[in-house]
Amino acid sequence: MIKKLTLLTFLITLVHFSFSQSFDKTKLDAYFDTLGKYNKFMGSVAIAQNGNLIYNRTLGFAGIEHKQKANENTKYRIGSISKTFTAVLIFKAIDEKKISLDQTIQKFFPEIKNAGKITISNLLYHRSGIPDFTDDKEEFLKWHTQPKTEKEMIAMISKGGIDFEPDTKSDYSNSNYLLLSYMLEKTFKMPYAQILDKYIVKPLALKNTFLGKKINSKNNEASSYRFERNWKLEDETDISIPLGSGGIVSTPIDLVKFGTALFGGKVISQKSLAQMKTVNGKYGMGISAIPFYDKAGFGHSGSIDGFSATFSYFSDGNIAYALTCNGSNFNNNIISLAVLSAVFNKNYSIPDFKTIEQSTTDLNKYLGTFASAAIPIKITITKDNTTLIAQATGQPALRLTSNGNHEFKFEEAGIVLSFNPTENQMTLKQGGKEFKFTKE
Image (tube, rainbow, N blue to C red):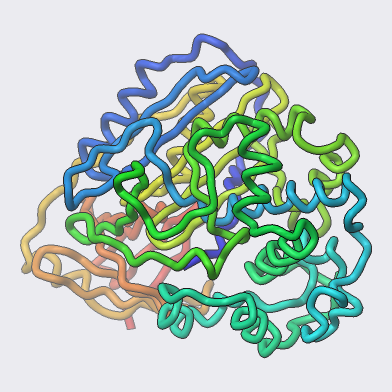
């Protein structure tokens, strides 16, 4: 499943600090050692400065079933980072004067409502009004592992109609970049995989980047997992469905190489690069702004099945960073924050994952349904033997771990629940905000 993830964005008070080439790699290694020890992360990260790799670390398995350990060349699905590649390919076509930003999609997809109004620019900016084909999650999960033809996907997208008039708002939609993928194939008269290879992979000598197929463990391709007491294998979305909106496979080393070349002006024209970086509403074209303290970066994140990934580039220091993941039991944004803090000489802490075991009887005082006047959701607290479980209205159940002192956490989303059993109250803490709940 291709998820709508916001880009790696850190809301931090602006503080000036300078980059140091010789950052503390020992501490960063200790950080990842801790993640590995407590089964919090499987994947890989890379950092490059001036195009030179200055840090690379890989944890976990490419395939747990055969105990296949991951290494720096293990290939991961990168989800919506594929959109950055697709946007670059569109600008390749624009630079070659094959298409233009202001032309409509009428000649490519006349069956889509508002095709005579929707422009290529609207698709790139997520301002087309075309609904996301993954919006109905329950329905999507019924067919996402089955191959789909262009005709089938166009029919599905066309049937969804329009959510709003073109260029009146921003609304992230995988459909936009799937249509751009089909448009590239029609424009260059070759399959998307060949276009990617010809215009990006070969010129930049990216050794481990390609449009995915069925995952091939013999080619050092990772499968993806979710954590439920231990790692469970996820289903594979058939790549014919996302194509250039989420179907590319890569490594962090290739991604930092791509990012350095792209933002260094070596892939598309300076005019096209400037256009990509210009934000309209919420997004740029295939990228978004990523602030980190006083640093202004650009990049994208992505998620498909149990895979997640992010890449970013900061001109200040000429730093490129990428993370790919095939299994997370932690908040990957927190991991990225730690890595960038290490690179830019900012303080960060090695997390403490030690938990406190509580008996099933001890958990009884926390059970019940809690409501808040501040936000329109209810949270029901149940238990599974010695594990406390929280489920918010319309959301999946979350298995919590105990911090002690009536405090429980769900680390993957940075959620902390603090209980006051005497007052029948609970406080939800996430992203620096707090919301008080009272038991009904």
